[in-house]
Image (cartoon, rainbow, N blue to C red; front, side):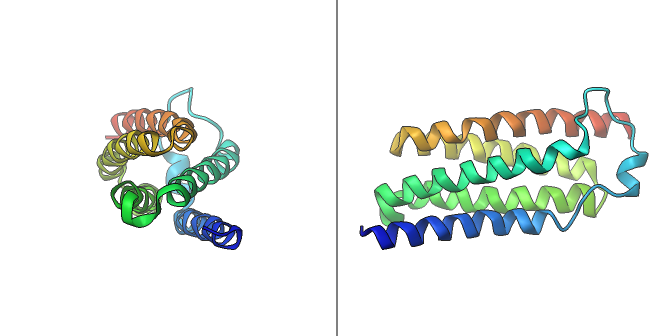
Length: 156
C-alpha cells in the first residue's frame, strides 16, 4: 500500500466514523430529557461532546489500522462489525433522544455493547493496538448502558 492510499484510507475511515457521529448528533438532549429523573452520578451534558469526539477518533484509527494491515478481503468480518456498530451507535441517539424511548434504546445499546466486544476482540487478533484503541469505547458504552438502564428504571 502506498502512502497516498494509506492517507486516503485514513481520511475515509475518519469520514465514515464522523459521518455516523454527525447523524447521531442530529438528536440532542431536549426538554423531554431535562424532565427525566436521572441519577446523581449522571455526567453533565457538556462532557459528552469531548468524550465522544475522542472516542470517534480512536474508533477511526482502530479501523484504519486493521484495514491498512489486512484490507477488506482478509478483515471483512471485523470491518463489517465496525460499520454495524456505527449504525447502532447512531440509532441509539435517535431512539433515546429523538423517539424518547429509553427502553428501546437500552435494547439497542446492549446489542451495541456485544458488537463492540466482538469487534474489539477481532481487532485485537488482527492488530493489538487497534483492539487497545477500542478499550475506552467499550468502557464508555458500558457506563452508558448502565446509565441508560438506570434512567429507564427511574422513569418507567
